[in-house]
Length: 390
Image (tube, rainbow, N blue to C red; front, side):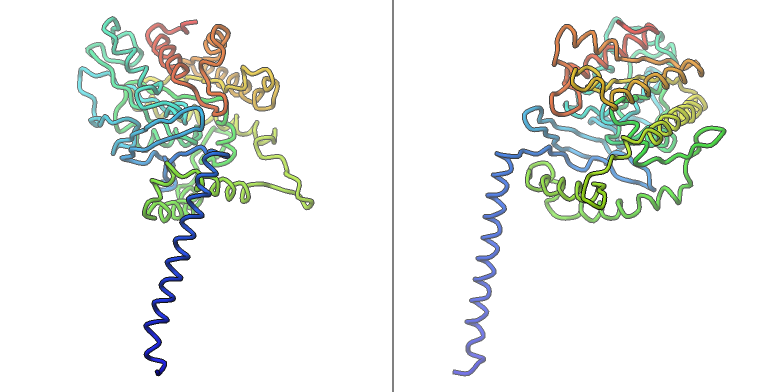
């Protein structure tokens, strides 16, 4: 028998070996996935944002799951207009509609709750109560009979991102009132990590657009390529193994170590950088206010404290001090520029004193449905009455 007659037999053997190898790999992955789910369950979340021309924005037309082990399992939707929820809005509100836009990060977006439980959704329900007179809200036309609240929050975004998001997109929907949500937990770090403004003697100035695009160019290209992988979006919402690998890779690339392998302090622990970040946030707020008022809308700031403010073991941590410094600085700037400002620290503290553990999750830093309900109702009261409810 010549060598040619043996070729089909060899081919079948190679094919069987490849199939056996593939099956073995799948079985190993399946077993590893099960082990990770049981012994090391992961936080699961799809990619919620993307860069467009270097700027962060929410991804459009999502219907996805966010899961935190032992705490929440939620569904989120976004529209083609890149807002959270399932309602599409006209570019110009009808004459009977008072439109409010909520800017902010994951606390405005509502990580940890379903669409209808986010604070913008609660605010809309509270303001559309039959006993509310729309004309009492600043900037709202007297003939309005109902409210629309746009949830324009973008998770993991900083104040500068949100200011540019308003200028380049949100203002085209002609809101009568814009509420900037400032969070005491990671807004300073977001500013340090990826600022899109420069601080000058005259205030905050957006970075050159080419510089912004260059900063996000590689990330945007990699993300776009990964999202095209078949099944990737499904796996981000269901595979604990994928997230364990992603976390390990992220930590290995982001961890700063010295020559002996010891972890160095992160930028968030660097006081000069943090102080500069707070200065920049203050300047960005004034930049945003000018654009909001130039478009004919009213401007309001709401401050949400971080959970560590109310935990005995972390109350004196540097993060808590930084949160209080940010709140004080924002209040100072609001007073100086006559901006309506609501600090929710007292309201949250009062509620926690009566019902500890009801507003924030224990492991995840975000709020439970009761927490976002408190925020929405407190903001509604403030807009209607000009003073905090408590």
